[in-house]
Length: 212
Image: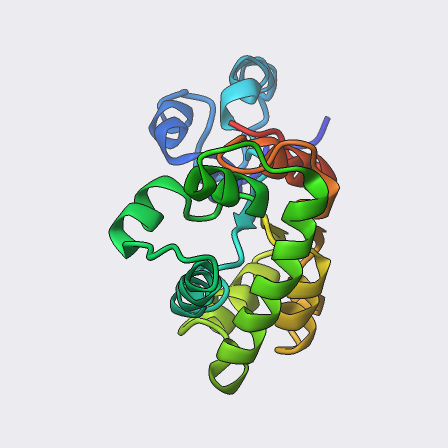
């Protein structure tokens, strides 16, 4: 059969912890060696731990793709002000940040909130947010370089967010970022909002990677 490949080529395809193990086998040398049976057996036994894992990058949108959280906080502050409720930002961040609108309303209203009421509130609050953030809308510092590097390295990138499609369009299309993402899962595509992991589990499935 063919000679066993140069070990320097082999090392580029395995994880660091296994490199010393592979190099310790006497039949794996810097130069091709005629006796390949032992090497094939050794590599076969190590295959499960040496092959590269499929890796993808799963990003949130608000506060990750762009620095828009201050605008969200100000929009919520103004919205609740019209309801006679003054919110304290530390409490808001610790208890409701990133949660679906209905959950935020339930927390501050101290009661159940029908879906119709939550949807109507979301329309008002998200319009406030977009008006506030539009003059400052920009990608997070370093984001484009990161996305370019991921693409150059052959890694898939996905966006998982609790925001609905209108806000996703406002950011991804408004900043011309959508082509950089291989899959998008927004708040309208899940039944359980954050902090439930459903958003990112669905996103991982779309990217064809196993979550860990």
